[in-house]
Image (tube, rainbow, N blue to C red; front, side):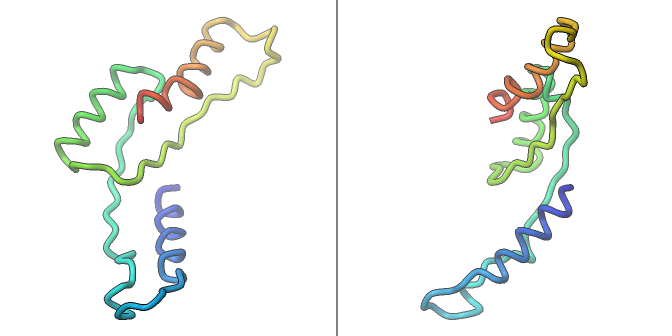
Length: 100
């Protein structure tokens, strides 16, 4: 998925219209994007925080973050066990705040 997103960003940058300026000098450096991948259980706050600290040390400032996480229970809401509801909320809702 990350490769696909990178490719899409590069193609969009290459096709972006340029207004004024020096042509090639103004082109976005889409071929020089750096992509780093990390695996993190975003449903666990401590895991998110420790991975974020690792990223800060290894990469520095992050300008784009791709969060490809989500949980689907496959149950009707009233048939869903409490543990699965909690896990779904942690990953699909809370994790967005922790990751940001």
